[in-house]
Amino acid sequence: MPRYCLRGQVRPDQVAEYRRVHTEVWPEMLAALRDAGWHDYSLYVGDDGVLVGFVSTDAGDDLDAIQRRVQGPVNDRWQRSVAALFASEGAPDQAWQVLPEVFHLD
Image (cartoon, rainbow, N blue to C red):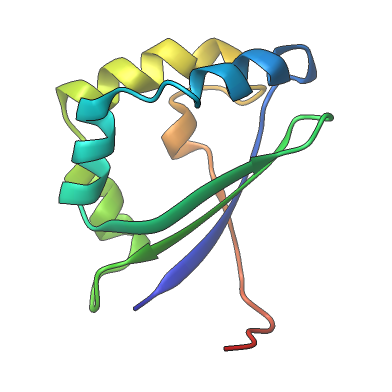
């Protein structure tokens, strides 16, 4: 199962709000992620706003494929609702930097 590490940047003055909204992720957003093939998805954010995400995809899928499949009205609404929390421009789910894996202990 392919795995990806992603980096983003939350505005430091919005970290508390970012954490809060992720305690209440909409059920339809969670379903959209699962239906699109997202597995073992975690987000970590530091007090400085550094955001790291980790996701596994269905066997044979890559990050681009699962990102394309999650696109739709629910994801669009979610991205708009959290966009002001990010230091990056545009949709947050399009501003990720993919970090290459250099070591994995299984």
